[in-house]
Image 1 (tube, rainbow, N blue to C red):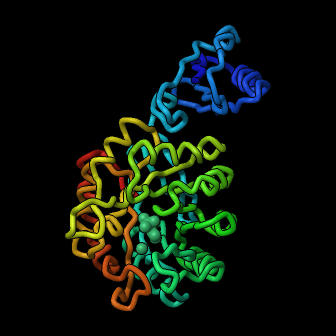
Image 2 (image 1 turned 90 degrees about the vertical axis):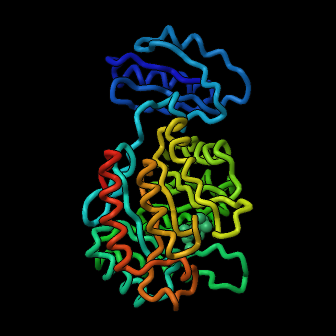
Image 3 (image 1 turned 120 degrees about the horizontal axis):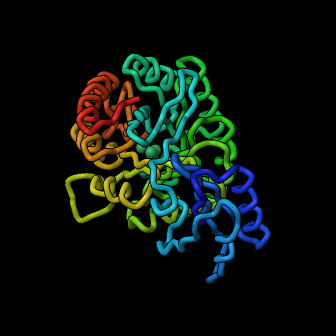
Length: 342
Ligand code: PEP
Ligand code: MN
């Protein structure tokens, strides 16, 4: 259910409607828009008649939201959500015409490695640095990440070069640490339906980058995001990273058609990861340009200064010099679709 407030409704009236909703044991989510505030209601397991809310001061109408996802839906909020990520070199905006660039190695391997990649990325203009301190690996014998020591290295990257830090949390314990040490909490493809982790991310302070599961439908992807919003964290960015298909020439099939499909259904930003989406270095530039052309709100790209020595995903990692070219070319394509790169 969605309560639409009048454009001139006062903050007090919005608060009173929220309080009334919460007094019934439900959860109220006030969602300010440019013209008016809407209040999403969650927590009702069956049909509840909330028509009486229409008689409260400041309310225009109550609309049932028929989609399975509510708070992520455009029915609830028409305008694009713009996620603001504070970094030492100014806020990075994601969504609503702002395309955010994120680059860095697959994994945090050593301090020297991260500082070397960061030093070479700095002149490209990118302001968000990625790197996994916790690595969800297919094999228990593969490099699992440095954990807290890795988060400390990322903090050093932030302090030294002014990057905002994007890094993955794989369980509740690491999520608390990532929330404390990083600027964006990444939830990886393998955890897209880890519902307790999603709920925990919904209670975190930092924005969340939610990657699409490798066999997730669009509804499942949006429902996963709904878990995070339903707990009160509205700063969620979606990320397409390729899905499993019968195609055998690439690691995954990058589903770029999901970008306009998400935009039609949801106000949340949708980013693209052409690195995991293709698995091969030579495909990263063309697919980055294609992602910008279909209106992606950001690009997450793996970059390593010595990809042949990388402990994970070296084959799909590009060099910093290649990233510099990618950044410039993405800017050109983005301007055609009226997006600004930052
Ligand atoms: C990553 O971005 O480091 C990663 C592990 O990606 P995914 O969850 O999409 O496989
Ligand atoms: Mn990787």
